[in-house]
Length: 584
Ligand code: ADP
Ligand code: MG
Image 1: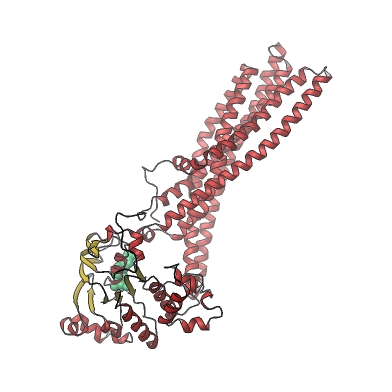
Image 2: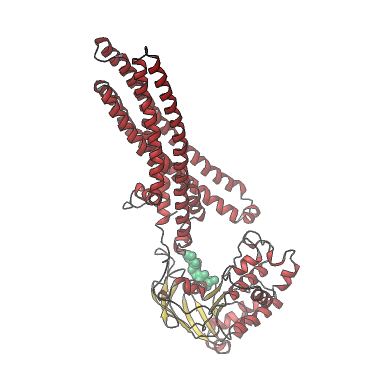
């Protein structure tokens, strides 16, 4: 996992404010309700003081009791409304973070995905964002309302008896000193707990993504251990965080008990000397009792924030991975317009700075229309040519042009929308056959779908399936055969009416009959579209208008089959062995 925090990264609270800002008024409303709740609670001791001082007056007693009941009821109603508004706002903050994180992850550069664990990224969207809920309510609001209530309560206490306030403050400052020692432990454990959840997500994704292989290899016990280890690590760290949080909470609790006893002792002495009356002492003691709640929420705010900031850091780390630009400088002609011409000019490329070059100056040109075949040994860099055309990666040097303009000058989404790309392993997504066909062109109507289904010889399959095009194909299309998956992938690409069609060993798993039919279809398409194929079958290669022979990241030769058989020894050898062996 190479996603890691940088020294210069902005602090987590800055990011938190970013997510909270759109909801600031709702948050302020909720916080005000909480404050009002606190205020109605705070008035009780004052009423109680008057009540105790006037115990001989019946009417005063009744009045005070009615007032106290009203205050208690208002307190409950405001409290309920306040917590609803706050909780709702906190959920909106989570929603906002999930939205921006999922949008961002869809735009990630393939290089960023190459270097990270999809399962860990998933955990950042699903699990880490959840923690924002508590951070918003408990930390932000807790700190705001708790802090204000604390100050108000202390002010009232000073108003009632400054000496006793001094005693109380001394205890609070002592407790604060202890808390500063505890809090860093909470952040550290919180971060490790969330990282462990990420590791668990990564292991799960790996195992479930290849469950057949795991089972066939008998690797369940090993994978099970890895999953349990990650779960246990998260448990260990969460328990550690809980331990320190509990210590923090109880430090606050203990401080209040100490304050209560000290105030009782000092206050009792002051009552004895006549400095204050009994009503004042009782009111003060009630205030100490009421201090408990704001102090707990301030301490809770700090501990919650320390756990939640770990999640925030993880979210922000994901949001700093390199992503593709949202819009580019120029606009490409609409898809379906003229077929594209393509040129590579001395392209050098490596997948990462610490990896060897894969392309050492690749040069070739492909005119508009017609079929160009790429052949060469495995690892020669053929698939990489297609990845560069799709701009999944950027070349380190050299230029790639489409219709005479550099790829980087076209707007990325429009560039891709004019290309039909069938990847080497013909991925099929879970969902229905129809979903898969329409993936690249949601607008295609039933006639177009039917036509493409026929030209890719999927009509037999569709007729055979109980629910036709609406049949579910299973996770990654496991309910289809390899050849069927390839034909689905080709149909999907054709439905886009591309200007440029890229087929990477797209018919490698087809039987001879289907392969011949698809070859005719592709030859047909090549009359009006630019088609690039990576092929291992002689039959496909010989029908191509030109053949680019690649080896070890270089273009060795370009020509027709007839020319190359005599001109290029490697091609002659491939033609004699590999093409034939592949069933061509
Ligand atoms: P071909 O399609 O001709 O078999 P590729 O273009 O797939 O070859 O691969 C060329 C080289 O690049 C291979 O050595 C391969 O290991 C390496 N390679 C391919 N994809 C990646 C990647 N995502 N990250 C790092 N190396 C890669
Ligand atoms: Mg390949």
